[in-house]
Image 1 (tube, one colour):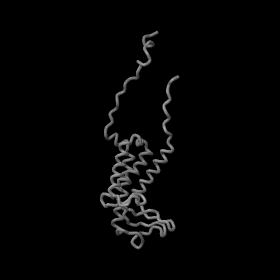
Image 2: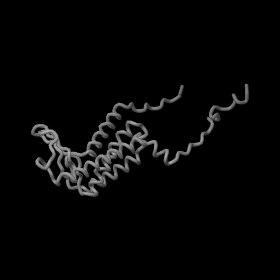
Image 3: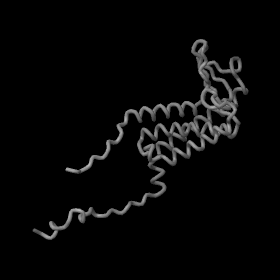
Image 4: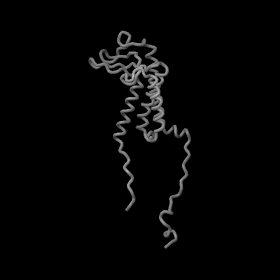
Length: 193
């Protein structure tokens, strides 16, 4: 028997690996899809809202001031929403702005638990964060969110929305679908053989 075979198993340890230093740029670059998509949603949202504000008087609910895209179905109007989706919490602009800031902070804080390193998750949260920031800017600058996409389904009028709202909703749906389709990690099995 050799001396190495007499050593207890617990004394055999793998070679220590030193942690690799990752620069700030590398950490930011790892989330590039989230950053670029969030920026794209934010810029598109703000450009469309600036165009609406310059083109249509506030408030504009129907023709002749509104723009008819498809008569009886799709109109471009100019309204303000002091609430959240479907005008929930109307008049609570400050509270909703604070909730938006807290949400962005929570996404950053729990980025590892949310698995933001995965591309589908970055795609979802890029849409979500771009939309949150777009509507947050509106609340700060205007005291309300500028909404302009107006759809009619017969006598039902769908709540008017904007690009930021679409980004938020699509991002949430993508994240929920991804979460339901991704198998959870199985519990670690013990080596008690």
